Image (tube, rainbow, N blue to C red; front, side, top):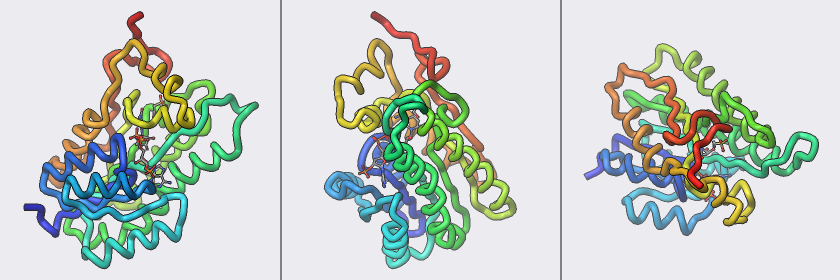
Length: 250
Ligand code: NDP
Ligand code: 8X3
């Protein structure tokens, strides 16, 4: 039976790593609050896992505020915040970069994490111990041609994570960044705007991580004893050494 005192909020829980993390946290007995834009998908996950689904667009401040008010109406404290909602849009060099793509990535991956964290902090501070987990990426410390909007946004997530760890020092709030390499989710389909064939080529001839592989790392980090802070965790498929070095079979 989930304890109402141990609430975990997962943004971007309608697919991929967020959905898998929600599943892992439910298994550990956390009470789930799940946010994302695709309400039908989110409701299905919440129904299956017994959590609360609340529509959330992390690009929209009013949506974040409504989301947090809905959490507050139900729970007095939140123990875990998983800042997972995020995306890549496009793969163009700077010279051909799309403003819309850059704005979408910055608003989602950077401002979204900042605004959700700011809005959730009072509830996290009400918990006897809390934990913020940010989904960074190997793109937070590596770069590749065409990836600038995404890599810049994930470099920013790294800065946000480190800043939070300094600002929350002395409080019982842990701060962790998970930095995955290639994970086969809807990530590439979103990046290539629905082009399934192009998305499939990203993982051709190699075995990528799954959302569940990354969720395992997240669940492990949040279930360490409260005095143990996993600062960051880099996790890649064995076939990937860097963002650009991937061993593929013909
Ligand atoms: P998915 O596309 O499968 O999932 C992304 C999730 O983010 C969806 O649930 C989506 O929900 C949500 N989301 C996107 N935009 C918004 C928004 N504006 N408001 C609320 N929710 C939003 O991809 P992944 O599971 O792979 O991605 C999850 C995180 O992991 C991202 O931060 C990504 O950058 C990171 N990551 C992914 C890697 C990979 O290779 N897949 C590697 C390293 C990091 P909805 O569309 O319903 O709103
Ligand atoms: C996703 C990994 O290599 O596509 O965060 O940037 S990569």
